[in-house]
Amino acid sequence: MHLVALHGYPLDHRMWDPLAERAASGRLGPVTSVFAPDLRGRGRSPHAAAALHAMSLLADDVARDIEGALPADAPFLLGGLSMGGYVCFELLKRHGARFRGRLKGLALFDTKASADDDAGRAGRKAAIEAIRKDGIEAALTAMLPKLLARGARGSSAEALVKSMILATPPATAMADLAGLAVRDEGFEVLSAWDRPLLVAVGDEDAIAPPPDAEAMTAVAARAPWVKLLTVPGAGHMAPLEQPDEAAAGLAELAEAALRP
Ligand code: MLT
Image (tube, rainbow, N blue to C red; front, side):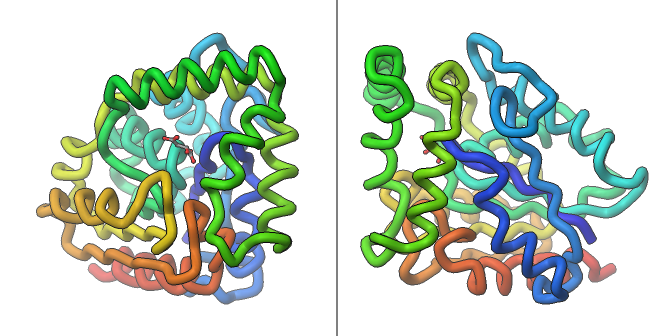
């Protein structure tokens, strides 16, 4: 089974490398390959940056990317971290019927179903202005302290996070922030979701903390299998910081998804 894995802001596909390695070496249960596209405007994405990256626009891109990258009819799990999770909600809303026959399970990492409130939107506006003035270093300064658990200082995960942020074109980061500010909430999508669901969160996640994860599992009443996984020693990047825990959760999700 494939995992389609969507990265967060302001990151790229490399955040999924530890899980891709585990899939390739048979350490991710029934998941044997990870397809981790870069979202619009960065890395190897074929889609150029727009002025505002609405989650719906990113979801439409990903739907096209899936068609191009996965064999037709191949079953897959859909996963996303933070902004990647918001894109999952839009993908299910807009393309769920199209993928219905092969989308077998949903994995949400360090994300939330609520939309931005006024304070959140004001914060996005200030972050856009900071990047306009100081470049992508402004995003590094703002985000790095919030992304990782305390124990990650000086780690290879921290080095990779820095590299991903610095590789993000400033225009892309600003368009992401503008899209994040106007995103819809995902509770309705989750309450309609009727396949297995994994919700994983780092116990030190400062951006989408454990109560956000609990709120998502609480509404998923139609899902036949739901697991809330709190990952010790992880911040907002659980699959990168503690990949063995994330891999174990995903393997369980895939097994649940394969049950008739
Ligand atoms: C992310 O990691 O994608 C962002 O922190 C999401 C957000 O700021 O809401």
